[in-house]
Length: 555
Image 1 (cartoon, rainbow, N blue to C red):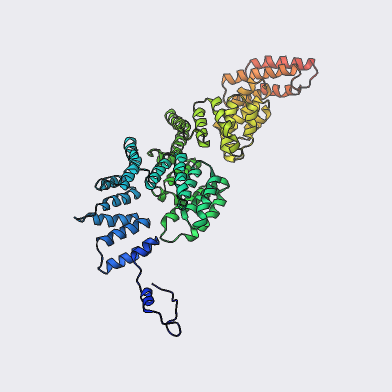
Image 2: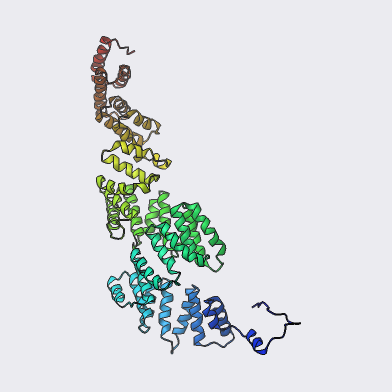
């Protein structure tokens, strides 16, 4: 240990009163470190004491205590396990060991260890949290009734509210405690986190600023600030906030490093996901969910399903993601079972009291009705949140489909045209719906041009059928005839000849009525010549006679 000198070793001023000299030489005590919350200093001194052979059970208990407060739960657990093997073990060691197990995710062990401890407020709080982890509602309510109106119990209750997504109830408790304890600055971080979960990102920033003024190097606070920036602005702004956190994170501070690595993947739109996220699946809860999202964005639905199928959802985000994966798998495989599961998950979230008025909650209800093909209801929910998604291609894709499904083709076409994503614009569903909108809005030529840009495939054949039938239905017989002509040449099905014949006769009627230019007759005759059906000769003879009588050149 290096100590800075206050006075010179020799010369004037080197002499000090013996009392002061004794004070200077005084070795720091564990209590001094603990009072300053310097757990690293305390554990260093304690381990030195133990290595020099002067330790006792109390020393071991303090080492376990310091390791716990440094976040080294594994080391703390090992110390407490040694202590509980002694015959005259201090009863509190069992509850402390239970806390270590809890923070290591060893909930069964935590429960068994805590049962051996005497009754206390800490034991009740630990059982309260374990009941939440075990999803044992009856047991949870029993320990809830044993909570007292003391700060520790109220903070524990607030955290359970948070874990159950009851964010407003948690905020109310934190604010009530803050009213009487203004110096409990860390509570501002908890309040900010609740506002973040409620999508009030600007409010979260304001509350968080109170804490950051006093502790500008807090990893948790800086990370939350970065997350707020990601939601309010974009990934680059969030990444800039995290740079400062990367610089201050010490080599031993692995939690901050894992958090930074995880969030940088999210802020960078999934870049490096396959390298960073898999090892973090059991460290950071969101890592699994973000890896599922990454696979969905890569259209790897099977991988996404494999990761999430055994996950028992407990939060709205988990329910939503399971719904999305099941919906994607159901549509990919044509599985009604998966679509039904997805619909149930969406309904569960959208109908819950805590989520029904949130943006994700309304999206869930819209998705539920979309799968049920109740598009009038879909639009009720999408209309209420469309201002938040003006430039969102996927939102506009679903919104336009819903508009078209209820017959509002004009607005649907306008929304389809807002989409910029090439991936969406090359999707057959997009092309088929846009073609239908063009036809229903009497722009059949644009629908035909969509077909001409496509390569020959099963999808282009399906689009051709759609154009042929919809154009016929809407009385746009010229493009119906062209589409049926191509279909007939690709597949000599008698139905295509019947459609082509009706479309050709229909365009002829429109020419006679003056609704179509007379020059179109030349194209219709050429289309008819492509068929060897005996009816063709009679139809063509009638058309040629009319053309001759009306002096229309058809050669």
